[in-house]
Length: 120
Image 1 (tube, rainbow, N blue to C red):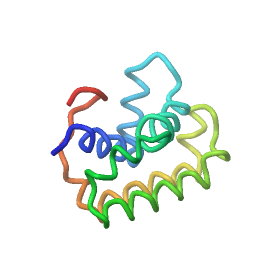
Image 2: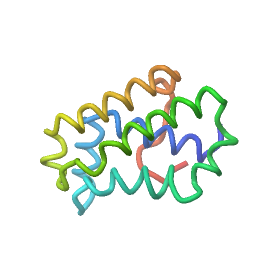
Image 3: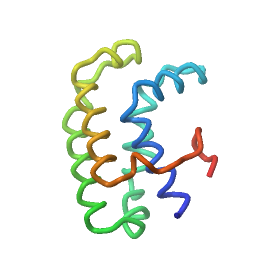
Image 4: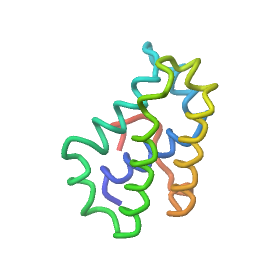
């Protein structure tokens, strides 16, 4: 599997898992609330990155990932700015669940990825 696609799946797995988010927060020296937004909208699915990723995805994968993106985008401006508050936010819980549903539907919840970005 292409490394960009693997890293993309890894990010979606991170967005779906409070345990992975807690682990990530414990390993870095910044509050990850902003990181979880920037990684999705700037690094992996915005500003031309979607166009690099699109050829690596099937039509169904792209449709479901676009659906997740729209869902997340509709809620992002109303999310708390700190991880402690984000973690407890009902709205963030809904985003996590949508990420989890997307992963499960695509079978990506079973994809093994390496912990950390840029590791592949």
